[in-house]
Image (cartoon, rainbow, N blue to C red; front, side, top):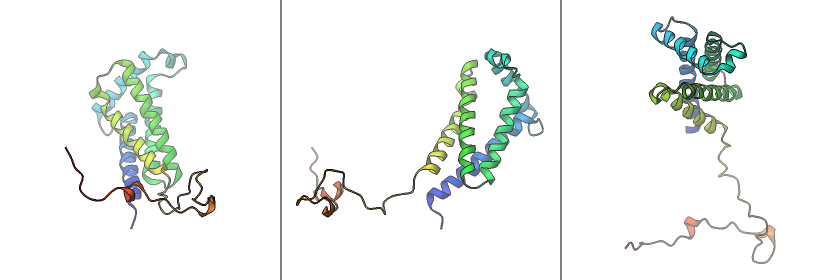
Length: 177
């Protein structure tokens, strides 16, 4: 049976991947939703107007929208279908994209309800990346004593494992006043 950590990472990967494939597709084509597509076009025009540096670099609203949409679709497919390390790379790129989108929303002064989904999915991407990159549980490894803590006879190699704080705690009732 798979560990809870593995189940969590796989569930988040598939859900986030499908979400970003869907959102990227909306940015690329009106076939899924004409209203959402036209709203994306309007939003990206305001982003380019608010950031003149993009115009100076030769990036118009169409190029920005289609680039972000294509990157979302590609990373979403990787998050959904490709096993291993590429998922973490796609996760990282999507997290950078979400941060950029949040920056654009703040730049044009959008209200929170317009970018709340980006905040939520940014948090989910961060959680997925942290869970996936967390080292395996080390409870099976023996704890080594810190340097300088020698045993009672002065031999550092003969130290016994110290009891945890929970084991040292007095047992019985606690008086609360």
